[in-house]
Length: 296
Length: 262
Image 1: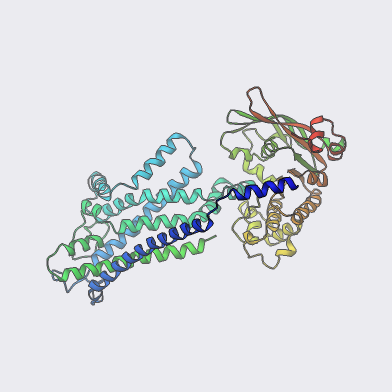
Image 2: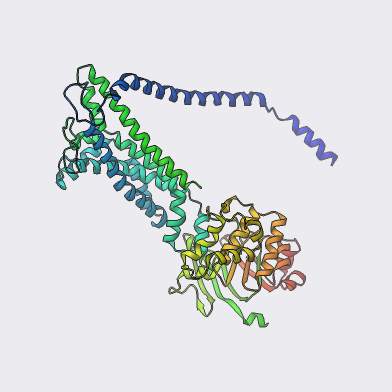
């Protein structure tokens, strides 16, 4: 015992632990990360402040969200663009979410893990990084010309759905992969079928993660202008769009306002941005509500 | 040997491969009815691998392959005509880590019977299952509470109750107490002794005292190295527990049981 004790004493001297210095380094990193957070918050606050300063008065004008546009910046509204964006969002959710989540479930739960499933995985991840204008060109040739929809809302919506798919698939896969295997084994061990296990255990557990991906990608789609310009969204419409009509969308409206020379249009553009932000906020609120219901 | 005659499972040369690698050498074995059977042996000896053969849970492991015949009620369960979902309904399983569903305590028990179209009274089934698993008194006032909020020992008994609710014939337990404290372990062991009246229990354990306390039969597994240096498991001895712990027939079992292993 005495020998081993002495050995312990010997070795204790051999550490140059520098604990104070190492803790100081930790503190520095903590401050750096805080700085990162504050930078983001500052930019966001600046953006909101600027948009509100320029656009709030116009946003509160009577009829701004209920009337059709006008040649004069102070009158008229953005109803066709707002309704267009809402329809686009709804169609994107109705098409991209089932297809994307279905793809993710198949890849995670059914597909054998071979080199070609890895290849598909890499390709889908890459598609998430493709610029939206490229999706616009794809939509133009497939929906406008090949399927003959022309420059209508449905073409735009399906193009945005394609744009959303990769992110929905990738995040849904992550969410499904994060479901512990012990849960699947518990269900299988009780004589529960594979589909029931997926339906009753895997999907509910993955819903919060899936929703996060859906929100990120649908928000991106609703805010996207480039692909819609290619597909043929217009910047002036005096009627509210239907599925197979010419259509407007909020980002297009914003773009069209800021390209006009008269100063009043800058206020109208900022006011439209407020509407777009509120729309995305509403979408997020819904997602948070559903997420809370499914939280485990 | 009358118990041997009332065998639930008869294994005839069961071999398990993971990919091309032989993980478990041919096992010949009869599992007697309404007894507790313990599988003991060092890590990597194939005891859990064999346990997962009894309800075809090995099917879920990519690359796993089972050869030989594993006869349950006169039928080879590795016959292609056997439906593994039906099989697992009759052969319940309790896992090493308690894995309750993130649902209410009630929902944990009721889920599988409802999914399988149970016709009886679900409330009664939930109560009787929880009673049999000796956890009813602790949870009867909070059946709506989440199963995952219980303590580890309670969760494991909930998992046993969940398995019992399917009215299985056999219960497989994969190191059911390894994540539990001694008091919870004792509770699970007592529970097993009560349950063997109705069920055949096959249990893998690292705890030799546990094997000697609860089991009627003990299978000792060991690892061996083949000519290419690959390790694989082998069933060395299967004897009544009293015999294997007092007068083991093989030297290997004797060495392991007396702690002279390795």
